[in-house]
Length: 299
Image 1 (cartoon, rainbow, N blue to C red):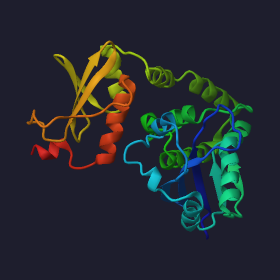
Image 2: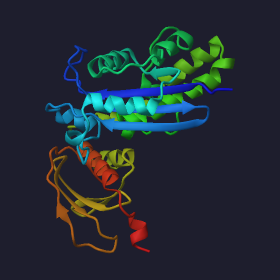
Image 3: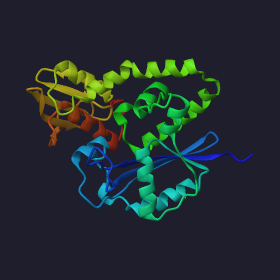
């Protein structure tokens, strides 16, 4: 028996306006190919050949060692996607906007997929939620355990989560009832974790208190402790010292050495001074840097 091959596709693009107008530039392509129980993933940045807003790059977590300026142009990236996809039986994307950008990608690059395209948000609205279109993030928080909201808006991660969400709903669809649908809808809309994440994200660009700093650090999976005059941040790969003034970050220094060393700190130039953006920067910096974790260097 031949297994059905499904490709889950996510695109990230520059969004200079609230509403789609057609001149948005694709910046990331992420995909997952599902064959039976086997999953393989694909990701590439796309060189837009134009200046991209810092806000957009921050949202994509692509402003450190991202390599967008060295990434392939759209038609080259699309040929890589075709080679990865191997003509799937079905392409699953999330929303109408994603479908709009998918059609634009195919037209601009000249790629052709004969596969039908399923807009999963619309399908869920018809099958599960009485015609109401649900938030991708709300559904992931409720149904996909591996979803990490601090790493959202990465095309590879979102494609992986879309695949998991699709598989989860294929499992529960067989036995669902109207009362189950209504109960699930009410549960999702009252999820306290969603409220917590929204509140933390509202710290972006604003002054913060001591307790706010600890909460934001936890959101980005950072260890934070207050030392007289500064905060010490540990990522698992390195240590940072963050100095505050008036609710904003005054300066930031970094040490890649072992826990035992208190010298060797070097200053980092800050593009933004709010604690949310700085802690996000620390998280992205060390995720890109990798290297040997601190605990192994101390053995």
